[in-house]
Each structure stands twice: as structure tokens, then as C-alpha cells.
Amino acid sequence: MEQTLTNIFGMDRRGMEDFFAGLGEKRFRAHQIMKWVYHRHVTDFDEMTDLGKALRAKLKGHAEIVPPKVIFEKPSIDGTHKWLLGMDGANAIEAVFIPDKGRGTLCVSSQVGCGLNCQFCSTATQGFNRNLSVAEIIGQVWVAARHLGNVPHRERKLTNVVMMGMGEPLLNFDNVVTAMSIMRDDLGFGLANKRVTLSTAGLVPMIDRLGEESDVSLAVSLHAPTDELRTELVPLNKKYPIAELMESCVRYVRRKPRSSITFEYTMMKGVNDQPQQARALARLMHAFDNAAQMKDAAKVNLIPFNPFPGTRFERSEELDIRAFQKILLDEGVLTMVRRTRGDDIDAACGQLKGQVVDRTRRQADFKKKLQGEGNPDVAA
Ligand code: SAH
Image (cartoon, rainbow, N blue to C red; front, side, top):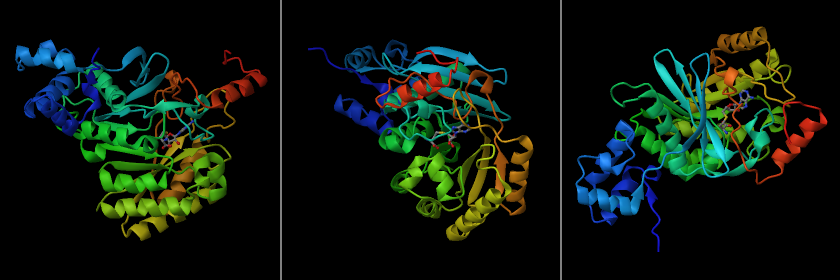
């Protein structure tokens, strides 16, 4: 009978130590392998010269080191780089690297497609197939790090990871938390806790669990200051309305002194970009700071809407975005406007699509709607 091989990318330090113990080997072997894989980007056991020949042969009988397959990659004129990565024979996801002054951020996917159906996000139109495995999540970071010639602790080009690609990371909790532990491990990518950010549409019970089990930065996709509008934009709000969401955020920051939460707010023309909405958002942020008993516990990140074929939304005018930001700043709320990057290669927030073998009806419905509108961008 053929033995199935364990993919080294699927295990964090603890998992690897147990794996080696199970083979009757010393735990420190796990550390040697992690350094070869994550610091030197080696995937062939035979190149691991500090392992004896016998051990290498044994490993080949039990394990493999298989990164995601690069289907294509595309650099943007602004330095952003996008990968389409094959996850299996049929599905592919996208990862995006965004260099900036003094740092480099990788945007990582957690699922093939997404089941949440946020109205302004192109991933939603693709429907959903499945969760990504630990190996498929950490593999995205590995592919980018190898491409960049990243050397942890020395020549560090990849300094930040945001779980803001395709999918809702808190719906794939265990795999995402394990992958994030490899990102932060010295034997992995060695990123500081606060440089790994998980972004959620607001899965309240899972925010609490994340607070108990992990130490990463949290970003919450808010997009509206009232339940009526938020439910329209982010249907998950029906289940976990704003008040409950904010309470879970308070519990999250109170567990960790000096932490803050970034509230993401995608700016859509005439939908959520009006001055009275900025004032309502400021009140919500003040209430949050007060409940957390911490000044600047809340930060706001305004994201100019990125369009995609078939969307009914438009990006807010630059002047309206600035006016909205000014109201928040005048109210004492730390507010940034995220610069749009990589939109020439459809790599900006909310533009990631990949190739999703949809298990829902959403992709077919969306295509039908587009064809009905005579949109030339859609092939059948
Ligand atoms: N599911 C997670 C992570 C993925 S999205 C979440 O909802 O947070 C990363 C961010 O991009 C989210 O804040 C999301 O709401 C935002 N976004 C989605 N579509 C967008 C679009 N078309 N333009 C700008 N931002 C968008």
C-alpha cells in the first residue's frame, strides 16, 4: 500500500516536533528542517546537508515539502506583485505583495472563494469552495518570500502579513491560527505579533476565541455606522449586529494592554460617505474607546472602493473621502486613508477573484446577471 506523505508546510513548530518524535527522532530535527524551508527556501531533503543520509531517506518515506503551484504572477507598475496559486487541480487563489516605505506587506487568502456575500466585494461573486489547509496558507507566504529573496532576521523584505485576501479567516479558524503561528515563529518567518493582522467581517464568537488563543493584530470590516446600512452591505451583520460586534472588540483589546483595533471602512459614493455618517462613525469609535478605557483603542482605515465588473457601487470622490477623514480627525479619531495599490493588475482590496469551483449558486447567478446587463467582460 502506498503511504501518504505528510506535507511539511502543514505543521507548525509543535506539530513538527511531534511528527519527528513519532518517527523516533529528536525534536531538534524539526528546527533544522524549519530553517531550511523557511529561511533558505529549500524543498529537497537531499539539500539539507546537516541531516544524515539515513535520516534523509527516512524522511522521504514519510514527508514531502510541497508549496502551492504558481499558475501565473503579475507585477504592477507600482511595485505590487500578484500571484495566482493553484490549490488543487481545479481551484486557485490570489496573494498580493505590496511594498511600501520601509515595509512589505503580503495579503494572504484563507479560503477558496468566500461564503459571506458582502455586496461590494468581488470575491463574493465567485461563491465558495472550501477552506485552505495550513500548508496552502503558509505556502502563500513562502512563495512570496522566495520570490523576494527574503531572509528572516537579516534581509527582511516581507515585514507584514494581512489575512485580507480571499475568504473569511475566522471561518477557517484552526488552520489560520496555526499558519499565523508559523509566520511569527523565529524558525518560520519571524514576524512580530503586531505585524500579522487578521481581518474579519465580524464573526463575534470567533473574535473572542481569537483573543484567547492568539496575539495578532485585529482588523474589523465595519463599512457602515448603522445596522440598517451595514446589514445591506455585510449580510453577516444580521446575525452579529454592530453593538454585539463592538462588545466583542472591547473584550479583545481589554485582554491585551496597549493593543488597538483597526476598523476598515470602504468608501462608496453616496452610500456610506456622507458627513452625518462620519459623525456617527466618530461617536461609535468614541464609545468604543470609552468602553475599552483606552484612548485610541480604535483606528479607522478608509479604503476607497475598488470597482470590479458588474458592481453597482462606485468609488467616493477624493474630496468626499478627505472631508470624511477630516470630520473623524477633528473628533479625535485616528483615521488613515489607504492608498489604492495594484489596481492596474486587479490586485487591490476586494478585487481578488482566483478560480473558484463554486459549491453555491452565487457564481452562476452573478454571471447570469452580468450577461443580462450585456456586460462584455464575462465569458460564459
Ligand atoms: N473577510 C475578511 C477579509 C477579506 S477583505 C473581512 O471581511 O475583513 C479585506 C478588506 O477589503 C475588507 O475590509 C473588505 O471589506 C474590503 N473590501 C472588500 N471589497 C472591497 C472593494 N471592492 N473595495 C475596497 N475594499 C473592499
